[in-house]
Length: 289
Image 1 (cartoon, rainbow, N blue to C red):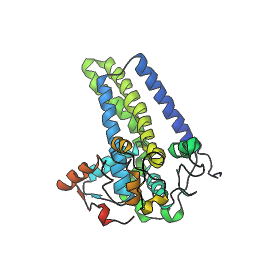
Image 2 (cartoon, one colour):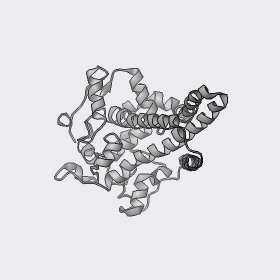
Image 3 (cartoon, rainbow, N blue to C red):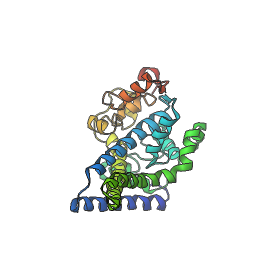
Image 4 (cartoon, rainbow, N blue to C red):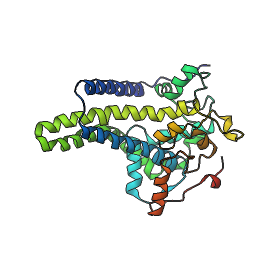
């Protein structure tokens, strides 16, 4: 099978540049090493990006499995998710993935246009990003793609992506100022590489692993309608992606805020409900496949 999607030169350039930055960071780290403070910044940005994606883009905006009363918390989740991905296209692509899993209208199936294997794994993991994909019109026409939060992220997306590199440099530099002006630049550059380039590349591959490993490695839910798709549960992947690796459960109950047993993000939703930040939380028994 062959796809007819046009090549996306802009995205391809960005992906190549990101991986070049990752390699530069790795070589720099091997030769010189990184400051502990830069590692901490990288960890904080990585956690923010992962939580922003699973709570902000995925559960809150795409599936509406809970609501967030706090504008600050809502925008913070969307900001960290937006460090790598545009809100409206992420939402439309993911909804298309659910509606047309493993067909030609699925943006990233490991079983279309390739029948699995290495080619299918590469396509679903990252290969599809190099080609322009347009979600079906019935998905793009949803009015909620024009809500205030999505419009806000779309308007500021270029600034948010840039901030994913400028902020680590600036914060690292401020931390280094206690040792003098020169340390502002050395700590800043250090943080730019590990909390900017390396962190961005690592989180991108972690997110992409749901599209590939989440459909190829793990176990299915036996006797459930979801098994019309190739989605699988992978506890290890779930733990390192704040629950996203429970992919078969998610395909069975896409509208649920709780994605299976191995879901580290779920306690945060429960806490948010108790302190009156989150509301309208949907559970598996309250939603349909």
